[in-house]
Image (cartoon, rainbow, N blue to C red; front, top):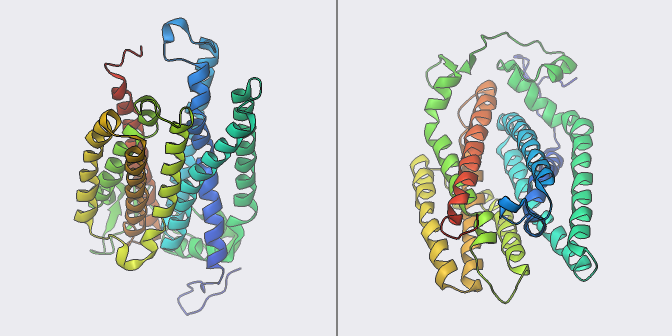
Length: 370
């Protein structure tokens, strides 16, 4: 039971913020480790499944379809987890969202490091590429199970998490009923299409109204990931040419991206470096379209050093802008609205990822790959 600190019955805010931030970081890492595992062993897929699909590749069409099904399952699971967690954390303090998003980037950095180590360990052994990929996937699977137990045993039972969920429930949230029952707090029942009250006008706010009020934030997230996924990781495997690093070159680029992406997600913690202007965030996200021709001409005329710099800048803007949007957007709303807004923004983010991944295939036009 969480005690109250005033006559209104509002629960007293407990300590444990730092512990919760650490847990959020680890959960963010686990949320994307499977997805990043699929991306990071791209060199193995390119060996087993050449893009000449007419011959079914060395791995066979059945195995190829199996990989596609597994990737689809990762996408479905990832979408549910990201939407649920971001919605949950949006009605908590902004540092929780920042830590969770930093964990996203950490999963990429960790998988890149593990992939480099496994590739190095098995590079000269017989069938080493396959052995390294299997070991790498086994480690990633262990991390996934660890995060499942961490969430069920630790996160949901943290006093500060119970505090924020209880606070959101007092404001009308329906998604935390289990924790409310444990805290002995009753929730109010709302219509299925209403998520709370508009703090600006004191009127009930539908999900559609909430989305329209934050359309610029949704568009910003969509554009961020549309540009990023139209370049990363497909372009970095297909269009970077031959360089001194040889087969290590794409892996180095992927690793560089993930490391810089991780670092960039901590920049908004410095308040004067955080971009909070709605118009500013949208303008900067639109300006990132210039990266597409920049990558094209760098791959065609530049050397590997310039490509590494450009990849780092892509990662820097991706991580920084994502954290800025998701920590600023929920301000000014109550718990139910923040929860719903988090879900809507993740939906926009995932639509951007999907659209960017589709556009990523445009780099193959004219290469004679198929």
